[in-house]
Image 1 (cartoon, one colour):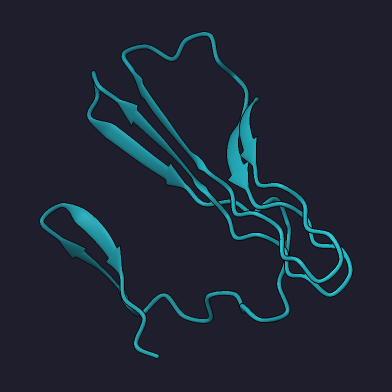
Image 2: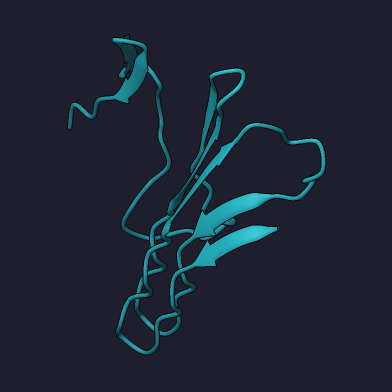
Length: 100
């Protein structure tokens, strides 16, 4: 596993957000683990940290993967994505637009 986790919160202080992982590879014949970058856990009245990102780019196949995973941590102030209708492709990249 390759993981980054934000620091845990204490009392009224919120936890730290996850970081970012960037992996560029030519061959992935040996790694069978998991990548994740999550926020820290809350305690007291503080909020859990937001997720980080893991970006994996296979140079040989030009295949890209972006993982946003907060390891099942939740927040009382931030909800889940209710609709994916704001996602569109622009110049080969995907963009998530928020209309709120």
